[in-house]
Image 1 (cartoon, rainbow over the protein chains, first blue to last red):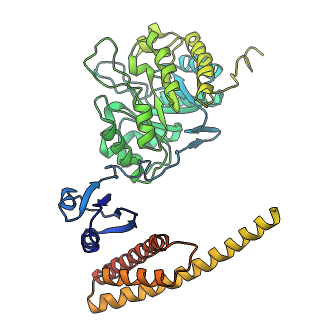
Image 2 (cartoon, rainbow over the protein chains, first blue to last red; image 1 turned 120 degrees about the vertical axis):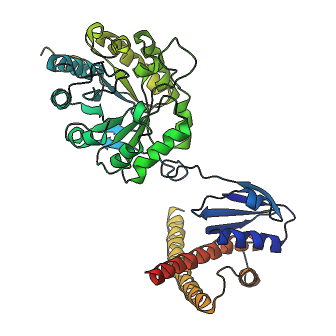
Image 3 (cartoon, each protein chain N blue to C red; image 1 turned 45 degrees about the vertical axis):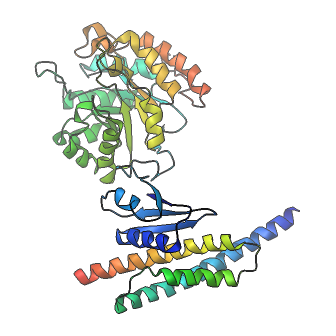
Length: 349
Length: 98
């Protein structure tokens, strides 16, 4: 908090404000300027009303500079967080693309999708084994069997693996298979789950809740960070608005906003963000242009027969084309994106 | 030219090392004063004494730093001393609690 004193504030007035701040538990940094004195107040754990200070004699204005979240804030950590998983760095210069099917359905389906996304330049395989579906009658995922399929395909194609954890009871088993644990939009404020993930050694990708403000989202990240897990990335996946044409309204502006407020990497999910295949590529391009640190995209080799989210899954050929476009966009803003597509290497040889 | 620059930079490094030693000796004094204030039941923040410290350092200042610069620098040193005293007091209170 910063307390700006009036130009004509007397020493006695300044001193009584310092005394008040100290009484409130702050450390005070006094800075005497040519015209006015500014008091920086640091620390202090109690919540209080800044109006209590504004009414003191000689005080011009009081600014709260601390956001309600601390560890997630860029004020607390000015440098970008870079999450390193083997040779993959999320939050660095390279835009990391995660892609794969919505759910693991069969060995063959996972394998063809993994091969396709790797060939196009993805670094991380996505795929669900435990699915949070809006309806209890929809396909719920293959569970541990699905995890096993995803892991072995990821390993075969030198991909990292991200998959969703829906409940505390799944953390142990998912940690054994996955490199990144994903918290879905519906669980963004499942605080017991977030707390538990704070103790995990694995990086966590926290999706934005469907009607969550950016502040609420960052407060949720704070839960994980406060537990000691500093490897948290955020994922914008669209929010619910009055617009019904797309499944959600993808909030691209969240990328620069979050990057200003926080040091955590920001990933964008244009698949859930739009819910429609033909809208995925334009929004993915926009996300990279806006400065996203990564993308997470659904790719399915036979989307028309996918057990979930078929309408928003890209065909591998569409994904290939998108990656080629992103290779043109990323350098324009000083980023790279898997410059060496692994096209044909080890393919048919 | 390059040799001069290196010499001056070395000199700055040595001066900084002396400054750190001096600042820590000063901080040790402040801690001791904090302990005495606690025993005597006096508040950590003593505005009159802080003003006296600032007057004293400005009195002996011969530049090239001007009086305002000296004041700003010593305000920060005093801020840190106050912080140190507060942390020490909290530790002491915790000890007494347990």
